[in-house]
Length: 315
Ligand code: TXA
Ligand code: MG
Image 1 (tube, rainbow, N blue to C red):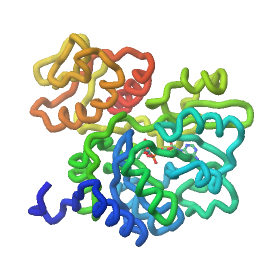
Image 2 (image 1 turned 60 degrees about the vertical axis):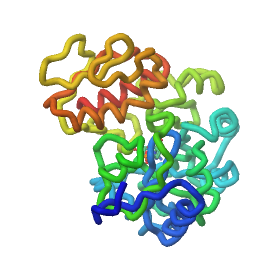
Image 3 (image 1 turned 180 degrees about the horizontal axis):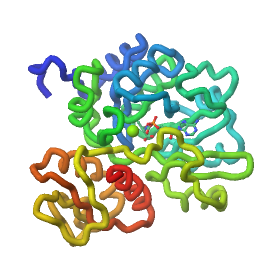
């Protein structure tokens, strides 16, 4: 990244100076893009209404969907929400990591109301990325952070994705390289009568069930997860799924032996495919072809989350 284009945000390496600058800006209430192990997040302090409003403004998010609040440790989580035994067990197994829990909000959380969009619950995550963790430890408050892209667009898995998507809208991106998981965290809601996955992600439903027992029966679609819009991750071109064959004007996203123009994983490894999915959509959107075709992806493990994101990209 050069300084030649004045509208491009500053991109700093994730060294001591870069992290200090991020913490300084966050303290002032600015938005800063930071790497996490899932996707890059657009962070702002979650205790100030103006800071949170800055996230919505930068993303061009049309309405106030609740945001995930990121915490450095369990004590910070306990200050914001009521954790029961199930929540503590999940935290023990999956935190720090790619799991977000929707929990009852504490009256004295101190969070700006826009963070939870007025809901009596809050979504909490303890990320497992050294840069995000250090910034969370040094920042004066927990950080709200949705994916660092324009609303509705493909999520960013590199600093370059962030810089081009949010050019002119944010002051700083901390470059932590490519994100490891590549898909947003799994969101699980802990309700009085049981638990439900609201958004599939890197932690699978089976892994959660191995800790909590079976999920609540029934379809979660349409029940909750405000902001889980049908159309999302839009690459700006028509997307055709389960494509056995492609036409000439299609950029083909492949998997395994069926490589196409961008192979998500030549060894048919679903975790690798997840980590490369958004890069594939970015590449497809920049390619000459007018349309995008995606080969069938196995609907197992993290393949469930991949297919969830692909369905939204195609909607
Ligand atoms: O991996 C991730 O989770 C990334 C990285 C940056 O950490 N963050 C992320 O955040 O995806 P965000 O703010 O875009 O996720 C917000 C989604 C909402 O669209 C909604 O579906 C769900 O989290 N959510 C947040 N608060 C909720 C609540 N109180 N009840 C139900 N769903 C909630
Ligand atoms: Mg997003």
